[in-house]
Image: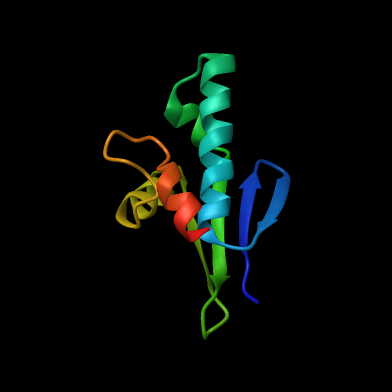
Length: 92
């Protein structure tokens, strides 16, 4: 089974799907913003999500902005930028 990888600096977490990896990233960035007072851009710099390998063995890497766009496109984020809990309960 292909997996998604969430990288937070030197920490690496295996996730079964993109939604799980994105939710972990989103929550960590939000907590960092509340605790540290840094900007979202600075807080999210250390986070990346690495997708499963394609047929050629290449893996795509998503930064925070790209991951948020993908999450909005798939309904995981509401238009106001919050997690869509109904979507997570329904699909994942």
